Image (cartoon, rainbow, N blue to C red):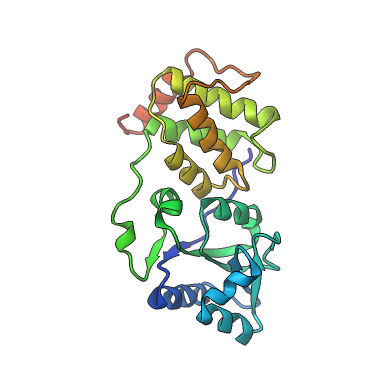
Length: 242
């Protein structure tokens, strides 16, 4: 099985003085002896957007600055504080889940990360008013299908080709044919929250959009005729109504 562990604690912080301060304190609380706190920004220059974060990186020896554009990787185990990240950024950092002790995201555009917040239910730090409205819940049959895919595909590979693409596309086409409602953004957020890393969550949402628009991505795989019925039975056996 290829499930990737993302059970580390998570938090979402507002981009204001209280939120930034709470994010730093939360990360400090999740540090262990010998850990390094990695502060992530997309570009090196972005760190100067926050004097507090810039000063913090300069002041402490057990704090490092890593960047998304440069392919920055946490140097060792410890919390990761992502400043102004979106879902694709969170998916990229999840490649290094074995080094992440805890993950906190400072938001800059709530809508760009709302599906992840809805799926992951992180601790809310600072002004939490932005999260009073969350992404609608996914159909339980879709969740069942995504859980099965999560355990089937190799998350070190892209879902744009090969076995992984065949598995993902065939399942999505079956859901579409059975008229099971799919929400591309919510499915992307679920994927990021459950260990789909790199660009795969974004590719998943694009497949959903393509299929819903009438396109039929190529796949060499066909799910069994009773596949959706099997998903529904599993949902019902868990006591969840679809």
